[in-house]
Amino acid sequence: MIKRSVAIIGGGVSGIMLAAHLDETKFEVSIYEKGKAAGRKFLVAGDGGLNLTHSEDSVEFINKYTAPEFIKKAFQKFDNEALVKWFSSIGIETFVGSSKRVFPLKGIKPVTVLNAMMKKLEEKNVKINYGFSWKGWKEESILFLSKENEVDVKADIVVFAMGGGSWKVTGSDGLWTDYFKAKNIELKPLKGSNCEYCTTWPQK
Image 1 (cartoon, rainbow, N blue to C red):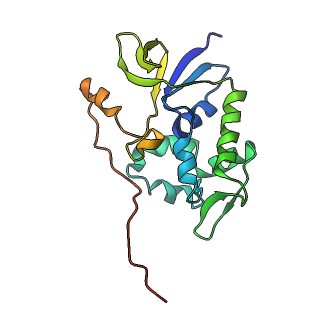
Image 2: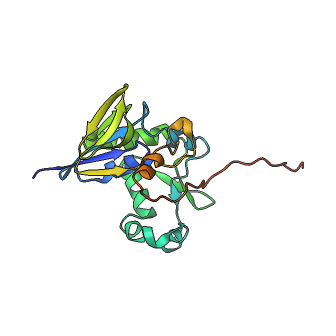
Image 3: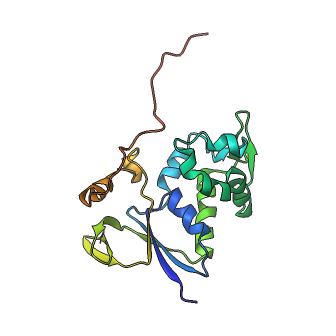
């Protein structure tokens, strides 16, 4: 069987999870990450408590999404329970907290979770290319900048997993949207889902 080539642009959790679940007997998978390491935002976010998912009923869970109908089909094939089972399969056991959120067992650090995910990619022979910044399209390829050199990459399937614009230092700068707009591809404005705020804490 001739494998189809898949190029995943972005080495965040979305790109990692996709690569971890593609059938390696059917696909030859490569991740292109502009930074020096994958999953940087995952590690930073994990410092505040690594909430992996929620334990509520999947029907109620899906209605928490902004566009539940859009994601429904995919979610029914791989829901929050399936995610917990998958983490267990790669050695990351979890527990349900008082808020019904799901966390790694106490003592398991974010880097341990990330390393387990990256080990899975290694087992599946996923190739990860660091220092590859996506710069748009050519007629039959996608264009990257690597060490100040332009690199053309051809793939049967290209997946864009570049995230939003919420955390520039981790690579989530949202600059990729400019290349879509240049091709007259309509995008909805990026919106933040988490934010910090200052408040006066009452004295006891």
